[in-house]
Length: 115
Image (cartoon, rainbow, N blue to C red; front, side):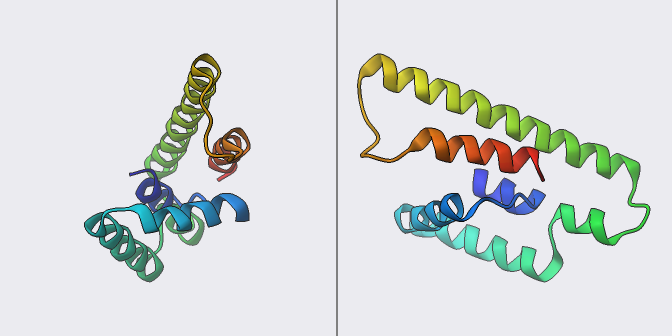
C-alpha cells in the first residue's frame, strides 16, 4: 500500500531506499506485484498528483491542501512506524538481518516531508 501511495503522491526516495523498495517486489505475491506494476505504468502515462500541481498553473487550492495533508499524514505514519520498530527491536533484542532499518525508515520520512 505504501508504494502505491508514494507513487500516487509523487514521493521520490533516495537511491538506497528506492533500490530496497524495488528489491522488495520480488517478495510480493504475484497479484500485488502486478497491481503495483500496472499502477506505475498509469502514473508514467498520466502523472502523479504532484505532477498535476506542478504542471497546472493555479491548480485548485483544495487539491494543493489535500496533497500537503496527505504528505503530512504519510510522514507522520512513517515517523510513528520508525519509533515502533525501534522500540520493538530494542525490547525484544531481535535483529533485522543486518539491515540498517533506522537509516532507511528515517530517509523515507525525510523524502516524504520534502516532496
